[in-house]
Image (cartoon, rainbow, N blue to C red; front, side, top):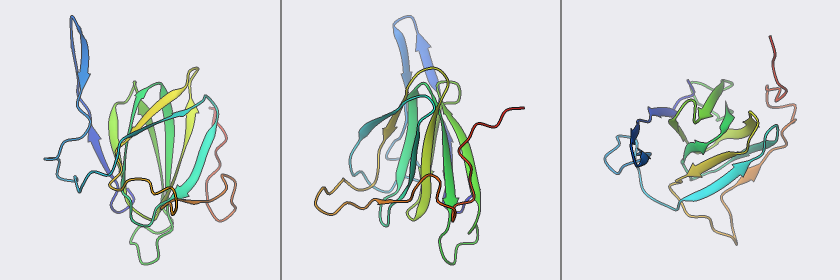
Length: 151
């Protein structure tokens, strides 16, 4: 796994009224600080990526649908430089994924319905000077092919 990336298995607690799923707590060993919480939706078959942050750590949880999240470590000096990680996340695999600064990441909606992402980054979004840097999904410097792999 890419250095600094963490996974927390999430527990869904159902009862006759519905269900509850804790995502992140301030006593989690990876918790740093709170920046904001936002919802992002990715449609089936659509790729959102690549991008990275210089300061921000992301905490991804998909609460509806399914998505493939892919990380690529191109950090100079990282012991996992060049490594690619692929995670299938959502209702069928409820996890929280910690994505450290400078790790490229993107997502693709999989399945038949949109996938709903809740992110709790360590920094709030600054509209005048965002800590978000984009790389094209098909950039040849990233060794990943977003096409579906059957078989």
